Amino acid sequence: MRQIKLLWYDITGYLKVRKIVKKHKNDVDFVQHNLRKDWISRVYTVINPSESDKGDSPEVIQIKAQEKILKVHKYVDNIGLGPYVSVSVEPIPESNSYLLVYYPIFFATWLC
Image 1: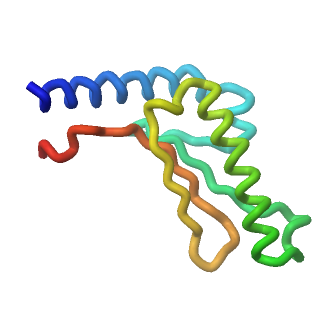
Image 2: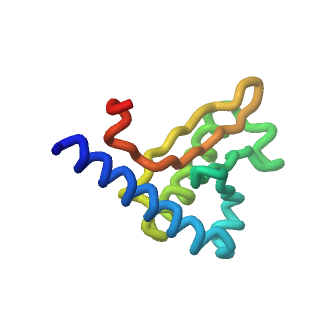
């Protein structure tokens, strides 16, 4: 019974993520944050340093990237995705950029 309940939460959560992303994918803020959606409704963007940050130290660039990531987090939470997604922030090799991915949370993955 517990597995069925977890599977139900996964399906309804995924459908909510799809609905929210579909509703907001053409919003000005969605486009402004350079957010994109893939075919399974993951939302992602690349956080790049601006041209004015090129001469800064890596620590300063990282702090500025964290500020940009925080703005994206706030937007994602404001549109209602917060409770249904998990986030992954990965540095992109040989650059000062970060890949930021929001993906649906699945509780019943151990059933497979």
